[in-house]
Amino acid sequence: MNTLLHVTLAALLLLTACAAPTVAPTRSPLADWDPMPTRAPTATPRPASSYLQEMDAALLRGDLATATVAWEQAQRLAPEDGAILQAGARLALTLGDLELAERRAQAAVTAAPQDATAWALLGTIQQRRGKSEQAQESLETAQSLDPTLAPDLFAARWQSARRAYDADMLAVLAHDYLSRRPGDPLATYFRAEAFLAAGDSSNALRL
Image 1 (cartoon, rainbow, N blue to C red):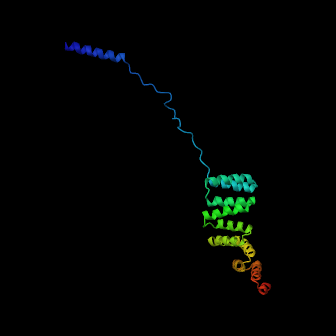
Image 2: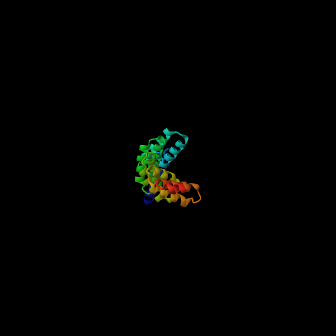
Image 3: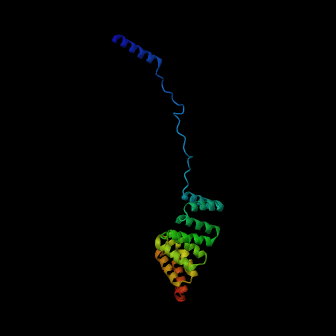
């Protein structure tokens, strides 16, 4: 009896195996595709410095309109950056708007009070506006921050001192020029000018 039962169970298992063949799972044709992005890629924004380079290139070409647009783009990105404010002052100076140039240069020295170039630019603009005393102060500040600027600033400082009738400053500048260029004939001229400004015509004539 047991033998018959075992034979019957074996036959049933064999029939079950034959009736239900193993089927390999199907693979979706999309399985190998990359997932779709959830948002469109965003472009990398340009740095403000690239707009300043574009402005300088446009100024060299004489393209003031493009230079203006480039500076405005840079200013939007960094409205309080000292270098950008200086560039804006130079642009306004090129356009002949001295009042706007001075405002931007003043903002530049406020943003970067230790930047000698910003002070030199402010002094130059103030000199062109006829603000001789203010120009003297700005140019002197620039030179104190960076003494290597002295040769470049001398002409502007001399002109400002003459317009302000500042005999003491003319004497200081003349001495400074002589110390830097002792063999230059112009050193004698500047010393004579300083004596004349001080009312010492005899020493001026001697020189």
